[in-house]
Length: 241
Image 1: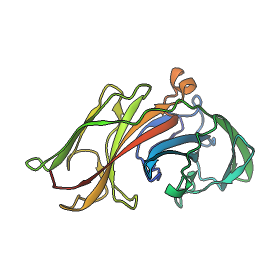
Image 2: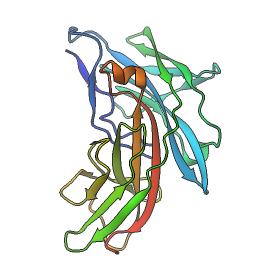
Image 3: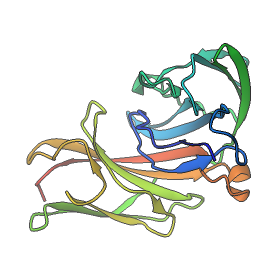
Image 4: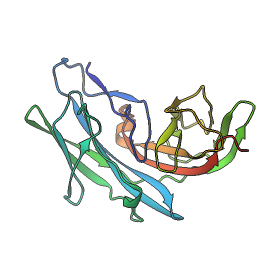
């Protein structure tokens, strides 16, 4: 079965690392091209206001030459190569592109070019509007050199991700996927994925992300289609109580 990562990329939203995998279709030959398109929205507080933004991804089992998404209002958006491999094309929002306007649910169409052939697919965007995770506990432990945190259950979320970044958005740490029954986590040097070691006294932003998958995909077992992410940010300095 030809497999490729749907969320094994570092998705710069600023960023989210979700190591989830999926197969496209049934058993196919290793030479057959598989592809999919993905649209989801993120929700965060910017300047004390709740704001939304859309992210678009096109994934292929072999390097693609281009990818375009057509939105619900027939606007065409050209996606850019995620890296030099060409397996992923994307368009992710800058902080200045977040809006007070709620995202428009509906069908988003993807046009992909591979080996001079045109392929198309669609992805549906739903609007559930998850609440933000609220912290009920957040503390640095100097003995273990770690941060322990806990948050409230977000109704409708399928799971959570915790990550830590610089103020400029560069990711320092990405935690493991947590199913919805887990509303606590620990950030330490033995957990998750670190891009670099934390520095005592340096300011970071810890993000708690509540994630919801598409209901239509989730009920049929294709659970690895994100629909929305609600993000709570906590500013902290590593090593300080």
